[in-house]
Image 1 (cartoon, rainbow, N blue to C red):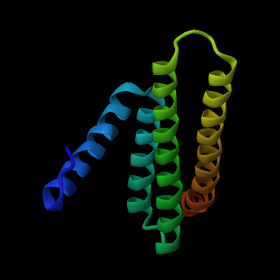
Image 2: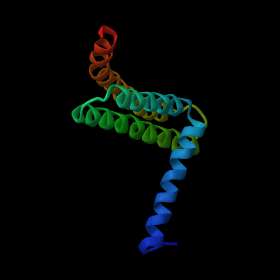
Image 3: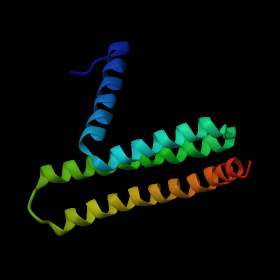
Length: 125
């Protein structure tokens, strides 16, 4: 059933939030990524990072979570297609996991560039 108007919009947001809830509840890596995101936000607040640094943290964090969402969706859909070993499905899953790895590496490098100088200044003071 296609809902229109505000009811459809609210329904769409509800589905999206349910998807994120399932992601965090069922995917260990997503839970780890969420914990690191919370740590980055707390550090950003405590260290009073610049607007530019916040922008970088927000972009890479969104990139990681989005990558994990797509990776998990691909894995779940692949498991519906077959549970038996299929080299083509393994290839697809590996490529999706590689995308998450790239996002995580970019986030880690960004975190180092943003937080290490700030923490160094705190410990020198």
